[in-house]
Image (tube, rainbow, N blue to C red; front, side, top):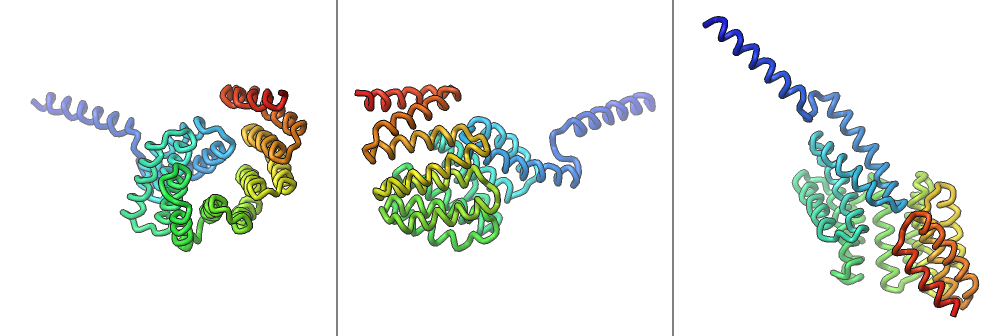
Length: 290
């Protein structure tokens, strides 16, 4: 009897040892701190990947980081990862999944009383609604003006709020105000060395100037965007800016320059194997050749 009890105890001990030691749960405070550090670093990497057009890679990274944020039971990380995942899913055209992520971020911020991240989440939501045509630009501007007052700590989110405000003012045709807001975003991104985001700020400024009829200013802004993207080897940004430059040249009646810009953009997209963009540019180039 004693022997059977002893054997049972050994088996029970081995079972528990393997069950708990092989668990993916964090085992101690040090491991949780490591998880947090991994997610913080991974979030920066994933956001940079997304800013350079590598959405699938960024989404894959964030899937693992969201799991680790949940394992660490860190509300701030869970919210921020969900916001970034939603942004990437939206860029990939997976709209309903994007809103699910943003809904989770809002719920988590409400649950833990994080007013700053709740405002950030509401601005992400408002931007999605504006771009998908669900709400008016006036309504979006009201939301961003109200919620941006609560964002005081994270400079990237302060820049994001200014960027969304600039988008909205552009939609309303308030060109000077729109550029002022984007320049606030640009100032933060340049000072903090987020050059992929600074390049995108110049790209937005170019679109504002082009829509207002300031073609020379638009081309200058695109030159600045291209210069930054060359520094950081952002092929996606380069292709987009050369394509936008072609569009500006067309609007300015400079078809030869437009064709050269489109050809440069096409070459980059082709090297990236972005077949849909290549097809679209072939159509533009053909129209200019007729």
